[in-house]
Length: 168
Picture (cartoon, rainbow, N blue to C red):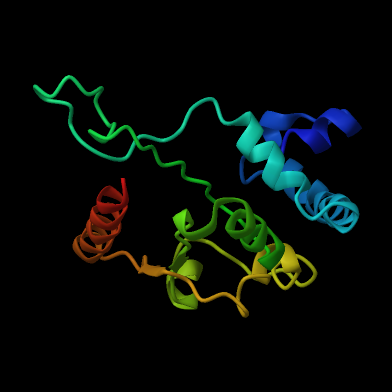
């Protein structure tokens, strides 16, 4: 979905993926363009993500001795992970299309942790819907805390993976 804007406007897609000044100089234009696309078609980016997926993300099984490819559940079900949804309309689209199979995961960190990671609040960017559109109105299935405690993070992620494996 991020490749659509550079294609339309002749921008360097790879440079828009990093944390460079190049990306920052186009950030507000990217947000505005994305809002226009979503306003005309709320599922625009969601469909691009699903259609552009090269393959599902395999989440279950190790395949050892079972005849099942590594990462595929014995009964053949697959999971696809979509990261970085940013708006309630995105979550609603996935829930409408995929129903109960959707598991929402929010990763949180304290503002102190974010600042240690060199995050600086920018008015007009960090308070835009693209950054805080899911701060309200979504009952997340999972909330993962990522404040730098690797053991805690690993434990939370393992619980999430166990849940996904049970659904496969």
